Image (tube, rainbow, N blue to C red; front, side, top):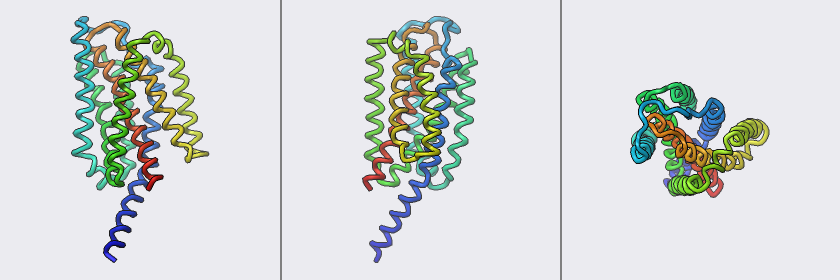
Amino acid sequence: MEENRNNNQNQNEEYEAYESWGTIENTVNIGSAARPAYSAMGSGFQTTAFGDTIADRKYLLTIIGCLTWGFFVNYLMCITLGKSLVNSANPSFLYLMIPLQLASIFMNMFSKTAVMKFIAYNLLVFPLGIEIAYIVSLMNAIGATDAVYIALLGTCIIGGVMFGLAFMFPDSFLSLGKTLLYATLAAVLADIVVAIFAPSAYSTIDIAFVLLFALWLGFDISRAMRQQKSTVNAITAAYDVYYDLAYILIRLLIIMARNSGRRN
């Protein structure tokens, strides 16, 4: 009898966890839609370096430092906030993260100093970190911890592959700018149609967005290598690369969670 009660409790917890996926998917889809808008407005890319030009080594270390900071903050958010967010908050609070992302995009676009660029970067790191922490904690709650590590590994592999390809074929990626913009706009429209008429096809949309953000990653890495070297441009480059990697991770987490749900 005690065993049956425990099983029923576990089933209820799993059901309550999966109730949140609709809100998560809507929030992630709206965030993804910000990518083509951001790119259409120039993606914060500066053809002229604001401030003094810096050495290539310092430029690269600034990008790596910003990326390390961003994902370290996300990791801390996962281990300190994730469980409390799942236990105490209605998932609709995720919609509050969208204005922060938009504010970050506009601040990054119009800022011309390293300090303001870094503030804009952190305004992106915080809402995406909240989304990642919430999804990871939900997956832990339904026993899909291994899937979290697989999604993280997949993100690292995609990042490494796209960095290598961007290093070897930068011109090819830079020529894809408008194509990626139109393709992402088309994917957003397809996402809306799927949400209304065929929710069961969400897996296909998630895979499409992973591929698109992987190409955006190659494009942004190529652009980072070609633009003028300054601290401001280094932070902008880190912003772009973080944006791509974070969304790839979120999409992979959703794919893995959905697959885990089918197996259960």
